[in-house]
Image (cartoon, rainbow, N blue to C red; front, side):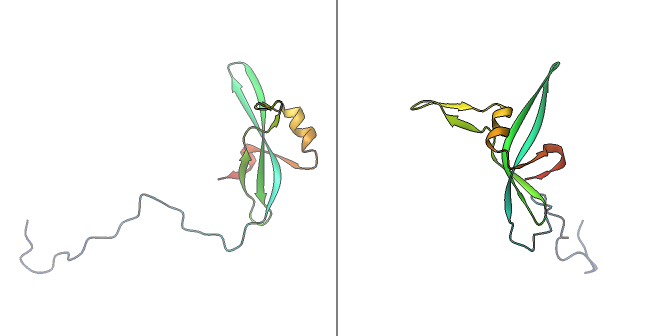
Length: 105
């Protein structure tokens, strides 16, 4: 219960933080280039393809999604979500990556 011989612990032991395990930081300024990110979704027996507009660092390869649903204005106050074929046609100069191959944050 009590430490009578004076050899006891004076301070609490340090332990790892539960909030963040990210110990490494980048040593460079990210240089992003726009890309298309392909994602296949399976619901029941039907598989559909979604295409996101994203950017990828040309130095370390980290990627992030800029726009989940590429769209275009179809009326005064309305927008229409583009089909994957329309996204490929609109952004035909961009590289296409599969979502499972990228380090997305």
